[in-house]
Length: 116
Length: 111
Image 1 (cartoon, helix red, strand yellow):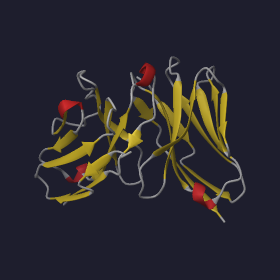
Image 2 (image 1 turned 180 degrees about the vertical axis):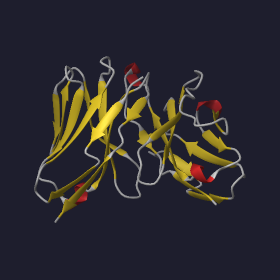
Image 3 (image 1 turned 45 degrees about the vertical axis):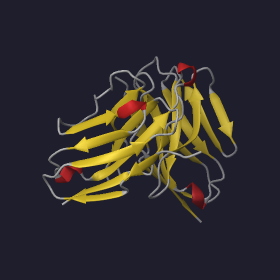
């Protein structure tokens, strides 16, 4: 079946502009995650959606970052008034919630954001 | 909250040697420990995981060991091959269905 997809694959924007990044999770996966990975760095947790529960926004670095998940499927990460330090690869992942246990997170290919 | 530390940050081995990457965690209630591999320019992918009801798990050339008393777990790769070169991330639970990742280990296997 189809894996996690993200769009666009690359985004170049000017400082101060807003950007929207999209994630299509694997069908049926109730959990969806956004991470940020700066060049050569680790996976920084941003936000997590689980079913219809309120999202865990504890990783968002500032109020310029927000995310939505409509209909329990597609998610959009929005960065307002982008700054150069926002440049990174933004990864989305999804997982099932079988038996309420931790399950494998399937990652998308990422969106490489460059803020000039 | 959970804190995961990973060592070493870089590891260079010769083809055929073994490689060991170690992680420690802080929350004694943690019960799930996955390892992800990220090849250059690719997405992270799960390679092996272990739950706290076992101490060791093997899958061909890779194995993970868990010491709950000491709160550490390790990834072991035997008979390394150039295609094992990648960044490896350990993780531990940071809440319901949420993971905290280590900072990664860049493994380089030289022919």
